[in-house]
Amino acid sequence: MANMSPKKNPMPTLDPIERGKVFSEVALGYTEEQALDEAARCLGCKTMPCVGGCPVKIHIPEFIEKIRELDFEGAYKIISESSSLPAVCGRVCPQETQCESKCVRGIKGEPVGIGRLERFVADWHNSHSTEAPITAPKNGRKVAVVGSGPSGLTCAGDLARLGYSVTVFEALHTAGGVLVYGIPEFRLPKSIVAKEVESLKAMGVEILTNVIIGKTLTIDELFEMGYEAVFIGSGAGLPNFMGIPGESLKGVYSANEFLTRANLMKAYREGSDTPIMKGGKVAVVGGGNVAMDAARTALRLGAEKVYIVYRRSMEELPARREEVEHAEEEGIEFKLLCNPTEILGYNNTDDSRDPRNGFVTGMKCIRMELGEPDERGRRRPVEVKGSEHEIDVDTVIISIGTSPNPLIKDTTEGLEVNRWGGIIISEDALTSRKGVYAGGDAVTGAATVISAMGAGKVAAESIHKYLAN
Image (cartoon, rainbow, N blue to C red):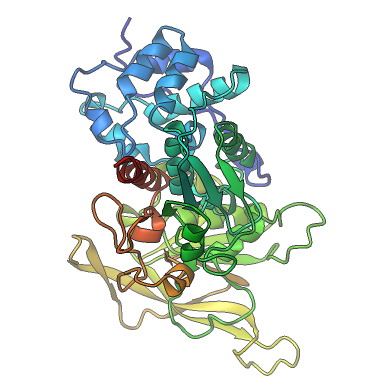
């Protein structure tokens, strides 16, 4: 029987006071009863508008129908036909602006909780299934994938299903890319990522870590080693800064560095050798999902006060609503329409008040107001004269975006990039080099996990067409 409730089943979560002190996963996932109740809200539209909003084109009504039939493994198989990382997507994809934004139930109420149902199915599979992934017969062709983030893993998985021998080259010591170094444990447990990676290995994908393409090996050397095509999914790991005085002070981090130390190097563990702030007052500059991750991580590392400093209003804040709500519940304070102009500090060894190589003591800011819309339709923030003020902080985390690392571009002849360092590609993901494809953040700059996965799928299809001819 259809469930015509205008509201989706709420996601069970840890208590805000409890979770602000630990790195345990905040969202607990649907029970079977909740999943069945939520699945009953789906109308099974013949036109399937939700599928049009999914970058990897998961057959959403079909997998939800399998849930209603209590065939959870069947639901997983439908999802995995399109997605190599269902347990990841169910946790971190912005479904509210993609598949769920197209849901008919959202016209007069809340859309079906598609992401929550995807997570339920993936978690059920991981807990119950003992079947090994189906491996395709090898076709004798070799493809190299640079980077083991969401675009690289997706491309590798799709090509492996087509019979290609795929090797993934990862610069760090653990596979997963941004999924392991960028997204905190409380939002995406690393055991989930490891499980997805192991599934790809079981399909025959080889993953080599501690290999920096552009340094350990070049793109040209990969071709010399017998790889017939290369996919570049190296992400966007070069942090952007504001260019204001004081950014070289001790206690100023890029969000990339801060989260990598916490997530990949486990700085939150007792006795960790990884240097990172613990305690004090923290300001995170930016308003995206990465800023929310950094702020909530700082809180769990013992900060007595955490601020989000963002130059626009809450309506323009780009982070997911769920992440913003969780941050507010945990006590993080939002300083909106506020922009830093200088990071203040002094040299702690001689108290010379020399801002070079000193320690953060505060941040000078100015209030903003929203003016005329910019070229993207967002109202421009304009400084309010005479509104300068200071915030008392010990640590500043800059989270205003990232750019692709120039290493591959600088070591690959004939690879064209745009002025931001993003690799230029055609619609079929082909770069300016024959046999070299690219996708994800290495092309677009920092974006979502699911958009990177979509790019990996496009590239895999294009590589298959190229090598099959």
